[in-house]
Length: 117
Image (cartoon, rainbow, N blue to C red; front, top):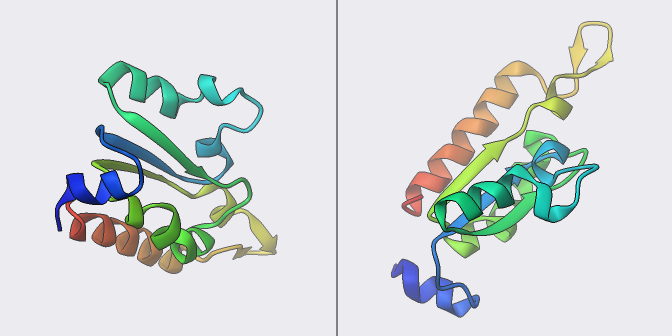
């Protein structure tokens, strides 16, 4: 696939940096222009798309990855999940168990690599 042509289809012709994660990526409690994603984009000359969703786990992120990340064919994707995965929902039971969390991250990385990101 032609990365430039695919981006033009979505109105994006510059280098694209997508931040994909939970509330930390979303920039909870700060203005959108003050998020570290926007600051990185400004610093390195990238357009940015914030695909951070407060409260999301890696499992939820994986379910929305095609719609929120892959269809835009970013040049760089920062994957930032974990805070909502690791908290305990019962004694010694995590919201997302460590092996599932690892698997989810590996799949996300592989999917990004498959599109040349």
